Structure formats: structure tokens, C-alpha cells
Image (cartoon, rainbow over all chains, first blue to last red; front, top):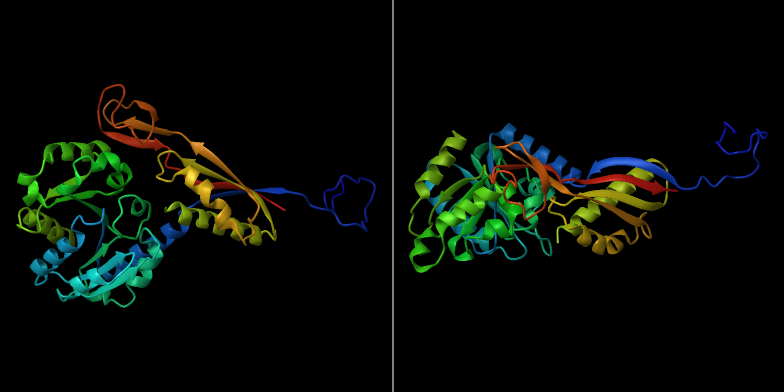
Length: 237
Length: 113
């Protein structure tokens, strides 16, 4: 074999022709989410350096994520300093609601996009004074499927399920309930009017994720909010 | 449809490796997609042709290697085949399960010229 180019011509040391190198196989072991995970790692390092506790709130549309944020911020704003990133396909409606609480907020519109990613969050927090913030709440796009796959650099993924959605959501959307480590069952003030089986819901959630921690609450009646607030206080202490 | 974003990442990774190696055409890309990864292989297949348009991967072949899922029971240590509907250990009935296989989402090799 010719040592110059590896062709089969043993007796020729000089070539006046060009070889077609032909197809070549490259071994490339790379995670398809590597770019997002790398950016999420940078976000996480930034948040750690500035001492910000970060939650990624995920749920279906209408579970009460924004109401939970309004209530939590209003009740705890004398103790903790919040900043909020709002993700929606369109409108600044949620950001306007959060702005009314006095907390700094930035709306991210994803357009056709079905989830927030680490790149959007990295740019989203650029205008915040992170040194002044204790907690960054990232309200993801309402969707129980896609946001499960994308790490944003948060400490906890918090999945919110309202009792009007039915108790079997953890079984129907197991990826999300496995990706989250905190679950809030919201709107429990409506339980007397629904067939929702709370015990069954807890069981379903623990079946898909034995380690999930569950809080039951209502932003409307205020029931159960104290243990959620205590958890936030302890996590940021 | 987060598979569009995932497929775009695949194309970006492949183009970067092709360019680094001085290749201007990708003939095929191979990926491992685990059955418990949350990514639907058919959806990646479906959008691949549209996503590769105008890139070094235009006209290339997508080879998907589906990795079956497996879980291990924390209570009896049994490891067993699992899919997205598996909720309990077939041996002891426990729900305390951990994934051992099937979360893969990785490009493995590519053919270039």
C-alpha cells in the first residue's frame, strides 16, 4: 500500500492523479442535549455565585402558576426578594400581573416554541440585579410534555397540578412528573365540588416518581400555603 | 414538538464535526434514542428532512438505533425490561423503580466524504 495516501498502488511513489477519498465513518459520541446542558450549567454556576435559589415551574396551561407566584410574592415580599421570568408563546399578560406585585419580571415570548431553554434563560436574566434577588422563579410555557427535557439551570423543577385537571395526570405525563422533584397540587378549595381523588393522585405521582415531594394548597383560600412558604424559607436560609 | 429542537441540535453537532474534519458532505448520521428518553423517534424522523435542508446533511440518511428501556427495583434489586407504561416491579410489585437503560439521546457516528 502506498504510504502517502493509503491507496492500493504498491509500486507508485508519485501520483499525478487525485484519489477520491470515498466515504469515511467518524465516531462522534455526543449528547443531543449537550448544548442546552452546557448553557444550563453556566446558568447554574451564575446563580450559585450570586446566591440565587432558582425554581422552574412547569404545568399544563391554567393550573395556576401565575396566581401561585402572585400570592407567594405578595405574602413573602417583606422577607424574600423575588425575580421572575415569564415564559409564554405570546402576550405579556403574565408579566403585567407579576409587575403589579412590585417584583422585577421579564417576559419571554417563545412564539411557536413549546418550552423555555437554557439559552433563553441566560439572556432573560441579563437585566436583573441577581445580587439583590433571593429567589428566581421561572414560569415555563404551559405544557406537560416538552419542558421536561430542558434543564434551565434551576435547583428544582416544580410541577403544578390543579385538581380540575384530574388525578391521573402523573400517569398520563410520566416524563414531567419524573423530571420534577416537587409537586404542588393546587386549587384544593375546589375539592368539595369535584370527583378528584387526592389520595389516588398522590399514589399515581409516587408511582412514577417515588422521590417526589408533594404539597397541597389553594392560592384562593390560602390553605396549605404555609408549608410551601416554610419550604421556600428553609431552602433560601 | 421539542423533537424539532433536538433534531436541530443533531444537525449542528454533525455539521461542526464535519467542518472540523474538513468534510463538506455528510452521508449519514446515526443516533441512539432510548425508549424512555421522552423523545419520539418517529417525530425526529419526520422533521429530519426539513431540518437538514440547506445544511451539510441535506440528502443524508438518518439511522436511528432505538434503545429498549430497563428499570431496577429498589426493593428486590431485580432488573427488568421496561417501557413508558411500566409502573411496578414485575417480581415484587414495588413502585420504587430506577431507570437503568432507555434514557439515551446521543449521536454515535456519522459518514462523511
